[in-house]
Length: 416
Ligand code: SF4
Ligand code: SF4
Image (cartoon, rainbow, N blue to C red; front, side, top):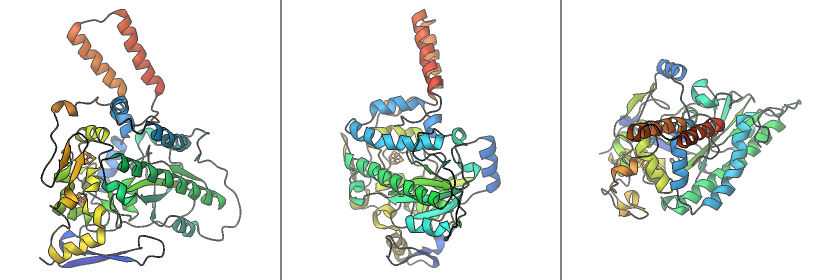
């Protein structure tokens, strides 16, 4: 059924020099630019119940994840993690970080507004102010400057479609590596103009990045919890540069994604962990599909980062323009129900075509819960209940384990 048109979104082409693309948005998909939200609720929750990063709030599953994830890439990961750790340390304020944010500002004439240079450097970039609601509680001091330059860098198409697989894992890590170099160059550029700048790495985020990207008009939030951008959907990796350079802010856009996801639901139907709820809820003042962490995490860790929800998304596979044109012309979701879009394999489980899902035992989803120190106490309580007061040496071991966690503090460098 042909749909009435609400509006058309015009965005720059995929590569520098490509013509602009025009994305039609059907009348029944029109909602609001960005994401529906209640600013009063957003402010209340961020003040009274500040968000914390998963790498701190869910630190109990970190050691489990490191022990469980594929060992095929240990060497590759080590080479990958080292430079990223330097960026994380830079943000956290350790002086040996490469992206340390307090480089001394140079004085001199700024012939060109830095936004122009930023846009030349980051074709897929958007610019937005950093608000305190967008920092994780444990990392409030990380973002030292008020403006965020958002970079969504496209991940290799072919490698990604093979996922979950070693190839899709490599595609993910390689994108971060290229992106990191781009961000460091951006910082060099801004510093050469006399400003401060720092990189916020994608491997240990200083806040929830996606709201910034949505607010800068680079896409909208999909039901899969990812940024759906016009050219490659969620097949991208996100990093930030924050700076005190005076920049012109971009604006959020209504691409029709907020309502399209309710029509599409492919990721909801195909998620191996059944982790994506079918309906949106109001969560912390924002209307969205709220992922169930405990159903996703074991699948992600066991199967190369999973990302089935990225791979089966028609916006990722075909691009937003063809998908939205198809919807306006037919009222249908391009590729939905086809093997081409919906089929995937899981190592050791086999192939799952459209309509088929893998089964997992209940044990599969039983992973350590909450913070590492809290989990140690939980286990200790279970031990007391089961066998009574432990021996002195066991008590000392327990105290040492807790001490080790406390001494480690809120570091998140060995993140799985
Ligand atoms: S990563 Fe996998 S398990 Fe997690 S939400 Fe996506 S499809 Fe589901
Ligand atoms: S698969 Fe469909 S429902 Fe899921 S994020 Fe993509 S467009 Fe939205």
